[in-house]
Image (tube, rainbow, N blue to C red):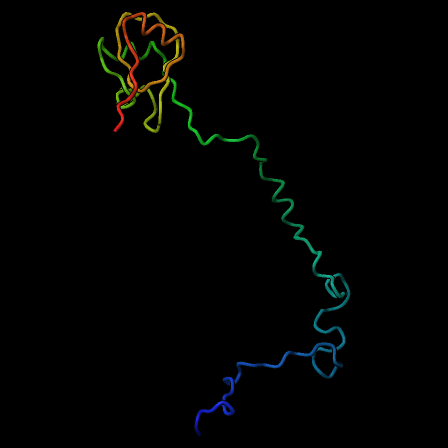
Length: 151
């Protein structure tokens, strides 16, 4: 038999007839049409307003997420006293040096010098932010702040 347009047929079992519900008790799906008896689900248009009521208790048990978290990380703070104790005079101090001496966490992206302690050492701080009091104390001791070198 040759393959022509009038001989084309879908594969057997590919097209099944839709089951006709509620067409007499002898059909197998008569009377309640497979919906059981009574209740919201048995009515026409009754399923769409059903909610999962058990989920509500679960959602209420979770803590509410309040506030907001900035995507800009805050610098790790380090006191001027600790920096003065950890480094010698005329040392160049940057973030890597602070991490090496474990004055700031290894995960810190930036550092800020705080405190108004009186120091005698002149320190050079590279790429480190400072509070106004800390800045004044460093500059009074002969130290200075430098911007980091751009690559």
